[in-house]
Length: 530
Image (tube, rainbow, N blue to C red; front, side, top):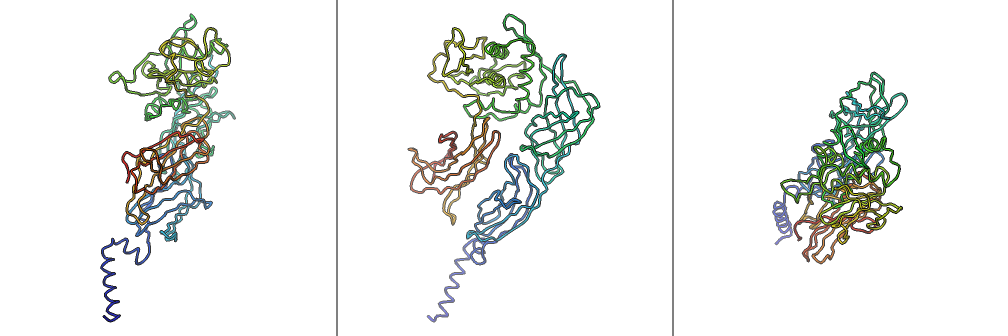
């Protein structure tokens, strides 16, 4: 066969082979990878300000988003075809810095094939209206103020107000805003309550909204219009041979907030004490509880505070299903109908109150029961420490600190959860799923986007996050790791890990979180690989 005929045959054969490939792969082979951005939008991604992208590509690409200082903010690996992704513009609940953001796309050989600049000015909040409710009682030193504001975001990125403050007669008062995101062009009601001294009708004052790093993201000036129709709740019980009475305002917005939160599957119920949005309200309750009591002794103070909880009504989580577990936040237990709950609810409330009073306390988890431990250096006559320096405190019956009911004297199944300044880490898979890629040019692998969250009250440092495959005998394969240097209480961080799937063993995919070399949280795939 002549050489020219051989060349023609080879060319025909090549065309036939190429025609069997998809259009995108064929285009990639012949002309290189192309990328087309179809649309984009600014959005919120579970507390992260994000940039949502819809695009198409003809090959494997990596998309990277850079901030105004040139720092890499987020990236993603994707394959050919029509696709979408969401890149974060800032940290969790962070304010997007004004300036230019650069989106760059790279092919599999790390060649840049696309570039686009985005300009953002950041969020800008205006307070269009407000309702100022004031609660006070005779001889009461401070006032409880509920600020309900309607806030409009006239900026171009999501806003995450963290606290609100009022300035009256050169005095400033601040309180936490319930978690909320306000998207560009959106109006939302924002709730906050604060302590402040008496505000007179018609007084001029300012309201400022700040983000989590104390940057001002909105403000307004108003003439005070005061409402005093704050609903209250009254509790009565006996302690020390005397009738006791407590009247407190009903924080409807707090009760609604806590009632709407999904219950955690953690056995460490300290998470229900650590949550900080009710701290100021618990402080108010304590001030009202102790006001005029003339109780000075620490042990007496602890017993008196506990007596308030012990006299609430005992209620099962579910009258229909006695095994149903529904731990309540302190505000829920106080305002659950006429108040009350089961053993874990009472223990959580008691621990929350004593912790805010400055005592070193812990939750005791026993078999089908929960109580409180109080760490004291002083001796209580006729009682001994239950464990370490913790005295036992029963919260479902009127027992004094140190008394141990006979059914709880065994410590064989005791777990102690200190209510102290400590981190409490959990993590989840974004969208509760992982992405499995097979027969790609990069092989078979799993891509997992993890959201690591600190639900505790202390900063977590040097968090080790791992993803890998494990056999039933805990042999590990292809483990990938990343370090989170620091994570503040109430904060989250996203990590994406890609792990090759082992082909010569039956394994399960697991992600793990370690703190100080201790495994603190783990998730596992429902099915095995490969």
